[in-house]
Structures are given as structure tokens and as C-alpha cells.
Length: 119
Image 1 (cartoon, rainbow, N blue to C red):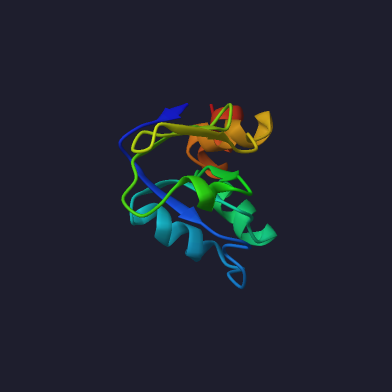
Image 2: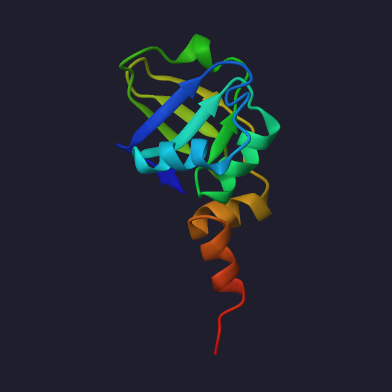
């Protein structure tokens, strides 16, 4: 899953701290956020975003590689991040396969429906 020309957030340390409800991630999804790359994420926010189908990639040095207005390409499966504006590359932690499956399905509910179709 390579995301191009979409809306990404690049965030700092412990992003999502204090947002224990799924609405925080859901609002970002409805705003068009396709992926979030950050230094680190609050645990509950991380899982809520995955449950909504938003991939999150942790990349401790990302703020040294991306600046406002840069155009980036994010490869969710491998964690490769390419800054097209500066021609620099960096690697984030890739999602584990079971979380990638949830994101690729569009979230927990669509993933569950796919795995357990009603007859």
C-alpha cells in the first residue's frame, strides 16, 4: 500500500495523548487524513486510529526529514518514507501484518465483516 498525493499528518512525540475516544481518530479520517507519521503515539490513540483504518507509522527522526509543505510518499507495508521535495528517504516502523490487514480493510468493522461474512 503506497500512498501518493494524499493528505498526511507528520507529528511529534506522543501524538494523541489525552484522546481516549475513537472520535479523535474518526474526525481525522473524515477530514481526509490518509496516514499519520510521527515520532511516537499515545497507545489508546494509536489503536483507535488503526480501528478506523488510518495507518500510523512511528519514525523517531521524522521531524528532521519533513517540513511544512513538503510532498512525501509513504509506503505503509515497508515503512519507507520518501520526501519528494528534498529527495531524502527515511524508514519508519512498518505496521505488523495483522494491523496492516485491518488498515487495508478500512478499519476493524470492515475487517471483521470481511473475515466473517453473514450468509
